[in-house]
Image 1 (cartoon, one colour):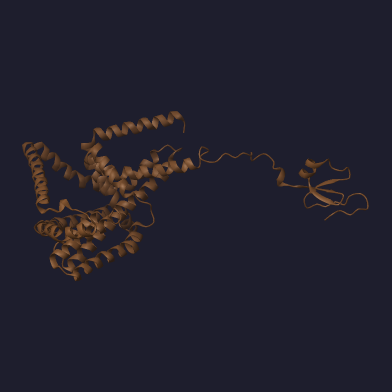
Image 2 (image 1 turned 90 degrees about the vertical axis):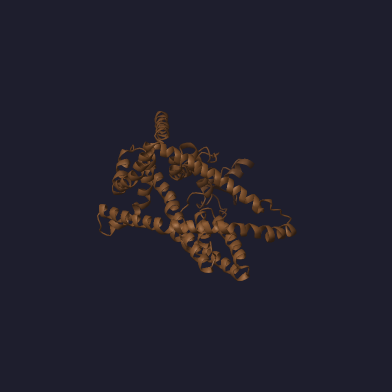
Length: 409
């Protein structure tokens, strides 16, 4: 690629980024639809391989998604609200136990003082945040109610998302092939390779890691519910949602579940049962879920995920949050490619002192047979001139010198 072509690609990238920044509000529903289409395209492809048409497969997938959303609205969301209300009711008891039982033990054994464990302080902080959140919600609702166009715009975007998703999902393979045809032929193999690797990285996180998070959340929620923890399902869901950071979900969930078990039952039996739930969950995650759902693909690092989401939201708002993971996946693949090119370049490789085209003297050693002695030619030249009767030959060939003296073997 010439310097001019590099500058052209740089200008195109800057123009593309500027358009995304300017059109972010209008592009948000299309980005959401593209993300949904990307997630469900493998399911539609699998249904196609079973003999179903593409349009019927997309319709069937949409029907299943609709039923899941109805179940979420009717069952999961009200249940979650009840769990949150129960957790807020039990929070003062948790804080009182921390202050009366846990804090003295930590101070006595480890010298750790938990100033934040004062129930009054924490409750005041929570009330302050709730007031602030309520004020923001009030201002937002007032602004929305004062502008009928804003309500119409939001409703139009909500209706637009499933419509665009349907058409993108139906024509996904065609769109991908058309984009591939538009690529310059000189760089098409490289771009196709980077696109496949980006798909592997992003798919390993979105389809694999999210499936692991959902499975772990369900497993912890059911296990803690069977143990008898009142807020066990809520703790399990929290542990599953933050389990994309290794061990963080298990540590946070285990800590909350142990406090809930001690405060609610005040015995060792339920403590050991909670430990057993998280022990089984970690075992299933390590030996079943991750190998089956994620595999050995190198996905996105948790720190990269957190940074990408925060940076995308800061730069482009909600659209930046949606595009954060795809951009992070592509950036990681490009960095790997640049690292591969760098390690294979002359800038990284050591410089050879000897030219490969230059003949090596030691490659075919010369043997000099003289006066019954067999010596190397270099030694003979360094010491004294060769005798006139010497015969110079390649190694492995022995010649009998003139005279009666036999050649040395």
